[in-house]
Image 1: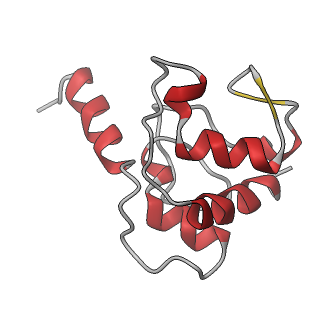
Image 2 (image 1 turned 90 degrees about the vertical axis):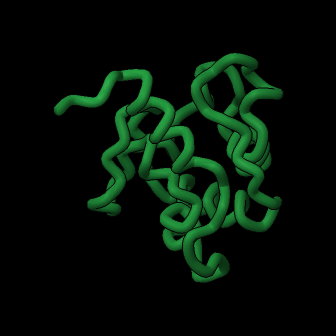
Length: 114
């Protein structure tokens, strides 16, 4: 039985709530896993991160812009990870509810993906 596309989208967004599923503070890679980023994104080095809602994060650390509008810097990445709706209202990425430390760990990991 195939799930409706809207149901799949809803399930993917529910997985990206920012509610940790494991301990954060074990480095950026663990923070990415705990936050559920792979539910929506393909992330190199994380075999389970095969989401198809958001763009692949391959090479995100070397990109000039985040979401095509925000200059790619560590501070801007943290802002985007925490509150993407305040930057680009209506985009598919929900506000995550992550704190600055969690988002900073994720941003550091993503910056390494060049």
